[in-house]
Amino acid sequence: MDHFIYKDGVLHAEDVALTDIAREVGTPFYVYSSATLLRHYQVFDESLAGMDHLICFAMKSLSNVAVLKMLGKAGAGIDVVSIGEYLRAKAAGVDGSKIVFSGVAKSKMEMRTALEGGIRQFNIESEPEMEALSQVATELGVEAPITIRVNPDVDAKTHAKIATGKKENKFGIPISRAREVYARAAELPNLKIVGIDVHIGSQLTDLEPFRQAYRKVAELTETLRADGHSITRLDLGGGLGIPYTRSNEAPPLPMELGQVIREEVGHLGCEIELEPGRLIAGNAGQLVSEVVYVKEGEDRKFLILDAAMNDLTRPSMYDAHHDIDPVIEADAGVEKEPYDVVGGICETGDTFAKGRDLPPLKAGDLVSFRSAGAYGAVMASEYNSRPLIPEVLVEGDKFAVIRRRPTYEEMISKDIVPEWV
Ligand code: LLP
Image 1 (cartoon, rainbow, N blue to C red):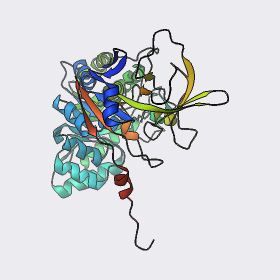
Image 2 (image 1 turned 90 degrees about the horizontal axis):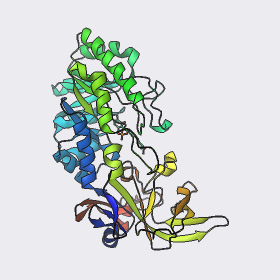
Image 3 (image 1 turned 30 degrees about the horizontal axis):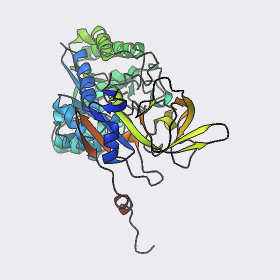
Image 4 (image 1 turned 45 degrees about the vertical axis):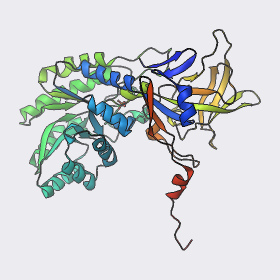
């Protein structure tokens, strides 16, 4: 469920007409609904009611400081994968004790900064990383809390580019080697084992892979405890998928995932952490764009937009589908026509949709891409020297620009021309 609905024929985010934002901010822009973000956080929180738990928003999906602050105030922790993300989370007022640090390439500088600023745990992805952290923690004279990410070799049945839990993926250590690696971690100075971490992929629409992975983690918990390790925390990752179309069958709900968690690991008495990104942010955001031209091709019509693949990369990168709605609702019964919806970048891959049925549109009309809140703004680039587009946050009948559109001068001024050129 989200809070993007037509009111009096105009698409609104909560009580704000997208046309009003477009007038003030210009297009294209991302817009987020606070009520949707908070609701999605709350359904996760409720899904683990009665169990000790922390929902750590995977901020790689949407990393605006205003959004992090809102979720942090609601009680969320944050999952970060770089020190840049860590510093954003801190800038949003999130306490280090609620920040978990994931990612396969943490540098010593990143480890040091997180240890100095406070961190809930490092999710360790390899033995060399574990040794580096032990060294940094020893230099600083502190203890670094760790989980080790295990790779359970489970098929997440999702897009190959976002599956992470198969043995051929770069993530975690093979679960078959877990005992040995935990034993090594216990020997290393200044590391404190607190639990186990697992994350098998993103946009999962079936609970079975989660169940298989969690079952393996439960078995491992008992084995490691028998080996004498203190396993008090299970970080069960993110990955629950969202509906990208109205017609598709909806993926399972957080409540159902919560049930699987209770069934598979509930008896262990561990504190549970989850790292959802997409499910919290995805349907809480849209990308609004203006039609620049409608071009008649030989055998098709192109809807040319002022947004392009640099603003929303998912369709070109993963062939992802995003529903596209006209901001002004079409009259009932109006006949739709197929359009190839494209941006202005000089690549054929800059195509958002092919043969998409839409009501007749003309230059100057606004359209909105649904489900663009997660992995939208964060994956944007300035390709073709197109400045990053603004982000807007709506709450009820008010809205605020939470990232402004840079000027062209600002964009260009980052380049430095040496005097010898
Ligand atoms: N935890 C870890 C360790 C992750 O690697 C990820 C996502 C998450 C949590 C959050 O997963 P989520 O709940 O959002 O599925 N750019 C791609 C998605 C990449 C996901 C990367 N890792 C896309 O646009 O589909």
